[in-house]
Image: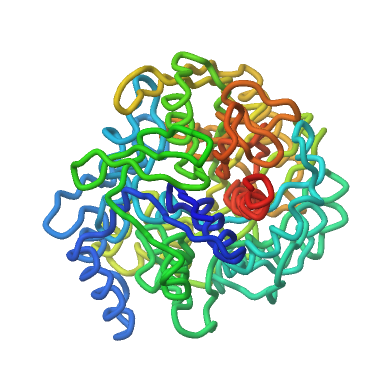
Length: 546
């Protein structure tokens, strides 16, 4: 069987890998933006500087933020204003190794009539710019799904292998099941305030659990320090893009598949899918490639283009313009916290800037549903030029400033979709169709956040953290990017819905494998679950299409 997979993000490559395992031929149709040569040269410069033992300097930070020869829009004033919620920012301002390739062309290729949503047409999709956090759904998270947790368990284990998931066996396993290989509970950022707090939480585990909190080390799709070639070197530049390839991205798995399945897999960049038509013999996929209109026939079509693009392709192909569908998102709030004990050593500077720790908040504590809190050490990404400003000051002033800042912990509170803004999406006619998003904030979201911060403050002694409540703010990025639900799975699907096998209603050969098919959206990050579900759906396509 010959199958077209639209999109090369995590869900797309998971589906492609599974189809290849099953003996099918696969074409991955993708726009496929990649970094410019100047960005690759910048990555080589980062590697060379690290090999020489040189810490990142002002010129390197400038190039990472602005790109080679670009204008650096970051400033201490702008960084402070963003942290305090006084300025709008967009995720597209975040460059990866000095490049905007992750976001390039999204406004034209995935046009929105309203709303601000993170989108990508890059090879590997948004996984080029993610925080690498991976957590499975709890058994209770599948309420409202036509499948249960057991249906995904073996697929989670395979996804964990693909991701190279660094998941230590700690207290967090009580909440988020450990599926796939375990890793040692090793420090990623030795000397940080959060590292000291992790030890404290192990000692106070029973007390915290009784209060409805389960803390633990972050689970990341990351090659940890000491894991050989391509492992983390603790350069501290994680949020600017990893020059060493330690942070997993979907393009990495796609490259492995190209090497292992040269005949069966064709990766086709520069291909933009517009729609499809089914007939008795297969499905014809319409699109544009190198400026020309193209149509090709396949035995099956897999949509993994992202929540909005998969919706747009389905609505355009089926003539379902104007039909509203759900749009689920994890509303995100930033809250600074101060570590009350375990201060880093004098002169400590964080050398790891992904998430270090997680606190899972049980249902019934502040919401009927679980919440998810990710914790980061303070670092210069959040206040772009602060490090450069401090380096210009006398040494004793630098030490005093960092003594304060190294106690600062940045908490990102994720709400489940049911507690976040109520939103819908619909596709309007066009080539390609435009997506209109309508959203209504929920008053209870702020009440939940307020209750959570009060609960954390009451537990400051066992937690060792004090929330700075006056600085809490919502993310400035519009919809955060943990989007789901536009083509939801139902036991009895209707228009623009899918069944438990991933089959799009009204079709016989078109399957949805990305998070567009999620009928609900829990608070924790969705990539791990999206890859597991993509594998589950792809594994059964040969049984559905005969």
